[in-house]
Image (cartoon, rainbow, N blue to C red):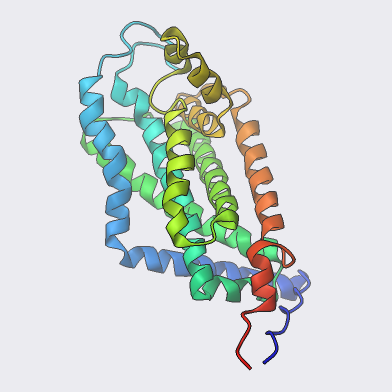
Length: 290
């Protein structure tokens, strides 16, 4: 039997086209939220990692910053106050990368193949997946902040810094979700995801400013770690969150985060093109025995 027909032509995003596009956005985001509401262990696992750092490691290094006052802080801080934005970043990072696992699973089971052959622009379908992942990240961050407050870690979430922090949070979540989307282009099987976790997520997290400031790395003589942390996009996302919390200028961090977001999303859209990668599978369809 011949191969499946090519995917339908994308609809024009006129008034009627945008109605279809918004319905697709509602369906994709709603599906992800519904799945998340039924996966109780997923929220628990998302909170265990950062709370373990907050409750155990922060207790042991509580006064590690008694020697110096650095931006964006105006006074001495405790370790749990310093790493709180980094742990929020941990939630964003793991959820953003976990979304790429969902993409691989959906592609193997056929659901993503159906989405990619829908009569909508491919970039819009992928953008809907990004927004769904971001919505899940924000829910998990809210849960973490509430539990952290119960443990005694108070963050200055009020006034203008709160609005700036929310902007940094959304942009950071989008950037990491776009990285996960790009990663899903190159992961062909679920079995390969563990390797991606070890070679992408953990280096990105530990070689950053999430757990220690750059001056500590430089002071300790770990020059190569210092240099890598300086160019790590995840470091810029953390620093944007950290400076936004205290109402300080984050410098170039927003531009790096937004630039990385656009670059990763553009390359992911290219990778999902019908003539390349798994986009080609969505177009051709599996060969059936005659």
